[in-house]
View 1 (cartoon, rainbow, N blue to C red):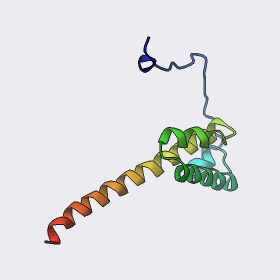
View 2: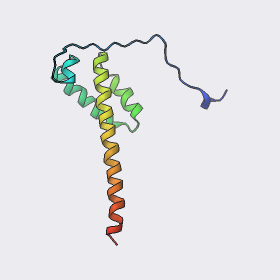
View 3: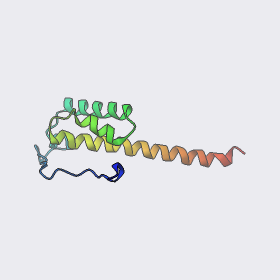
View 4: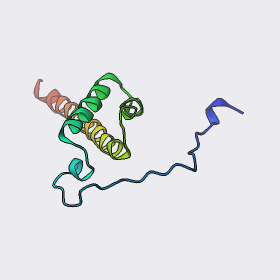
Length: 106
């Protein structure tokens, strides 16, 4: 058996239940019961891990170790997804602008 043909398997006994704390909340973090202080802390953790690691899987791995509840995990994953998507779009725009400007400099 080759090491490269191995696939990781999910554990079949994992169950995660999101707990909606406040159905009438105006923001997602409030509905998940995440206080403003904790939301800011989670955002700092996610930003720090985003700046520290290149791979999204590493960002998630290390950021999620700091979460205390599935609701925090959910919010952190959404923030990290937003950071990576924004960075991808920024890089695509930079390449587009670079290519666009090539013809103008002649």
